[in-house]
Amino acid sequence: MARVQLVMPDEDRDRYVEQAQREGMSFSAWLRGAARERLEARQSATRFESSAQVREFFKTLEQLDGPETEPDWSEHLQVMSEAKSRGASRA
Image (cartoon, rainbow, N blue to C red; front, top):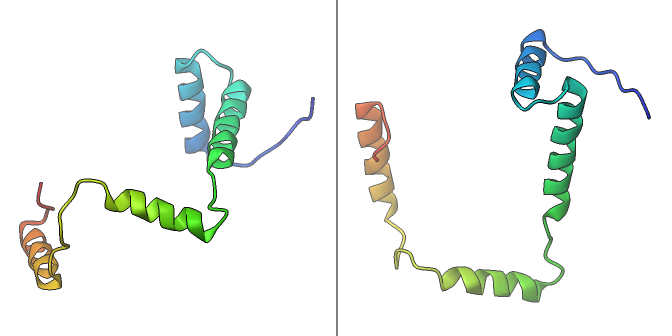
């Protein structure tokens, strides 16, 4: 088995160790698991192989329920202005 050394801020190490303990794992096992999960997530993403697949993707999106038209740009600006004046976004 290979040994890997890495450098990280103490605060990150402390948080990772605490999480590993909560999950009943050693720090090394937790890091390996986190790396494996990230790798699997990235590898499972599929890419379009043709322009036909891209067209099919957007055709599927068009069939989803949603607003018929996008709000006008002036409406977007009004919502942003209102949010700024309130200091929060509209829920």
